[in-house]
Amino acid sequence: MTVPRGPLNAPRVPQGRPVYVQAGSSEDGRGFAARWAEAIFTAHQTLASAQEFYRDIKSRALGLGRRPEHIKVLPGLSPFIAGTEAEARRLQAEFNDLVQPGYSLQQLRGMLGIDFTGHDLDAPFPRHLIAPDNARAVASRFQVVLDIVDREKPTLRGLLHRLAGARGHFVMAGTPEQVADHIETWFTQGAADGFNIMPPWLPGGFTAFAEEVVPILRRRDLFREEYAGATLRDHYGLPRPKSRFAAASRRLAS
Image 1: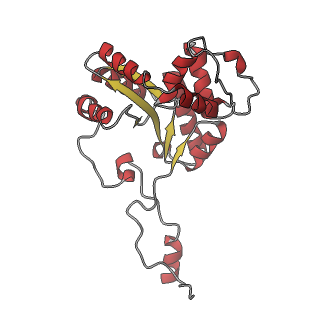
Image 2: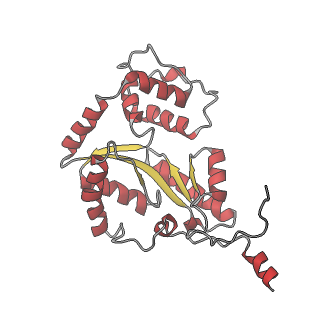
């Protein structure tokens, strides 16, 4: 078979190349993201944790000669939305009742490397079983779970509920205004450039967010009225990368 040689006779794609998206916030993950990522999908349970990550990533990127605004930090957010906070919490409780402990324990084992099968689901989480030298301690999701345990002191069942849908991302139950308040606080206080919305159920959870939360964000001038472009790179406000081969092509042409 004859292999064609020479330059590809096709134009570059509209984005130049796909947006580089990285997930995770371990030390290695942060270093990789600061050098290469254009969007970062990350998990944080507190404003302070999100702010520390945001500052660290932007500072590292600047130190590597990159423009910090060319990296978009996008924490995950899983909102239960209803007309009142009590109704939203009831909705969350209904979903928690659907959690299958057997599957959730397997999921937790994957995060922590410990099998909690046989432990009382309604007793306090057995924190003493997590050794300081756990081989997974460097993993970002391990640290997220540990942070939930240390801060909230949940039962084992309560922890499984916290992780069942959002896998360690921030879960909240509230009114559309409360969800919008959370987004505004994190965005305006240096914790996020945007959010990866993770509806607890589809399509209803997404519809509730789009129809009830987005209009509030628009009234607060926090969300676009229309798209300015046609690609993900356009939507994120990221520049189109220059072709690595453009300079060589110009030299050949001359």
